[in-house]
Length: 140
Image (cartoon, rainbow, N blue to C red):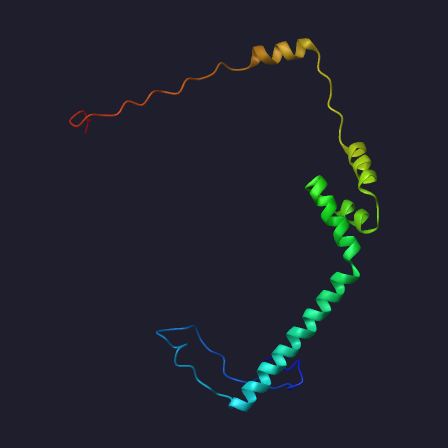
């Protein structure tokens, strides 16, 4: 449609509106069969070229992708720094050490704080029981 192929900067076919009452079944052919074949071949060429390009990119970066896969399997989540570190070849053991160094250490509480917290805890509320109504017991 935008002319970014070997067919040139020409729009082939008319824009179709939304499908309405079987309109798609009665398809309008506004290009010749030969041109439709050329368009199909060009689309196939573009798709195959981009598929090959994507596969090449994945193959060239396979080591980084496998490192990411292993990292996700071990840690389940990774932040952007961890992703870059794994792609750059940082070992997962080193990454685990970095994660531990970043985690905040929990603050130890005294027994008095714990007792006070338990005393301040509100008493549990019982849920009201629900009694089903019998026919004729309804209030209007």
